[in-house]
Image (cartoon, rainbow, N blue to C red; front, side):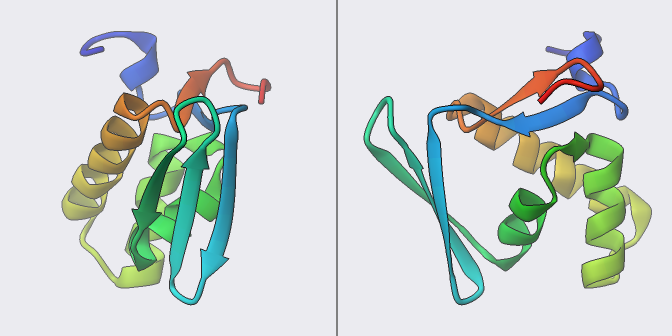
Length: 99
């Protein structure tokens, strides 16, 4: 939600409870047990998935380091990752310190 605490760079992003994930080479297959839907994450998505739980800012920094992205591009990509996986119910926001 724009302007909410959930969209701030320091909001904790965690995997949803009803998820199974398996790394296959450079990709990750994520199964939502509540819907039986499978999502395939590419290499950069897999790197971000493995970093969870963490903040949006942490995800952006991870992309900067792993893929030599400039900060603005890394932030935009991290935001897109969080938005897409949140919309699919695969991740959620939690208060810092919670998982």
